[in-house]
Image 1 (cartoon, one colour):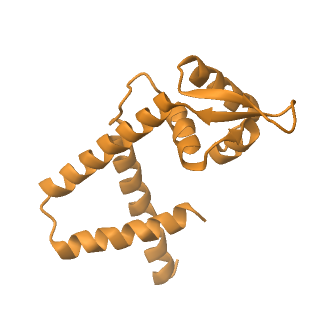
Image 2 (cartoon, rainbow, N blue to C red):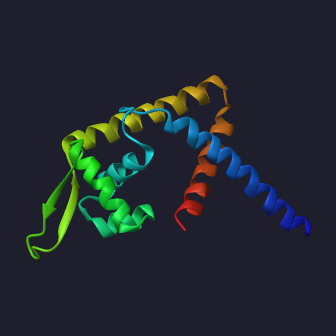
Amino acid sequence: MTEPDDLLHDTATDLRMATFRLARRLRRERANDGLSDAHFAVVANLHKHGRLAVGELAQHERVSAPTMSNSVDALVEAGLVVRVPSEDDRRRVYIEITDAGTQIVAATVQKRDAALADALAELDFSDKELRTLGEAAALMRKVAER
C-alpha cells in the first residue's frame, strides 16, 4: 500500500472501532429495556419519516419484508405502532407510530444525548476539541448517508 492508502485504511479502522464502541455504549441507554435495538430502530424510523408501508420500512432498515412484518406484529402488540389501511387502495396498509411510540423515541433520544453529553463533560474537552468533534460528526453523517 502507498502512504495515502495506509492513511485511508488506518483511519477507516480507527473510525469503525470507535464508532462501534460508542454506538454499543449508547444503545444501552433506553427508555424501555424490553424493546430490542431492531424494534427501536423501526419505531425511530417511523418517528423520523412518518407513516410507511411494510416494504418501505424493510428497505429503510435493510431487512426482508417478512422480517419487518414480524417486527411490526411485535410493535403493534406492544402498542408502539398501528396498522392504518390506505384510503386509496384497500390492499395497502401503512404502519404509523403511536403516541406511546413517540414517547419512547423521545425519552430514549434524551437519555442517549444526556449520556453522551455527560461523557464529553467528564473528559473536559476544550471548546476547540468540541468543535472538532462537531466537524467530525458532520463528516461521519456524510459517510453514513451515502
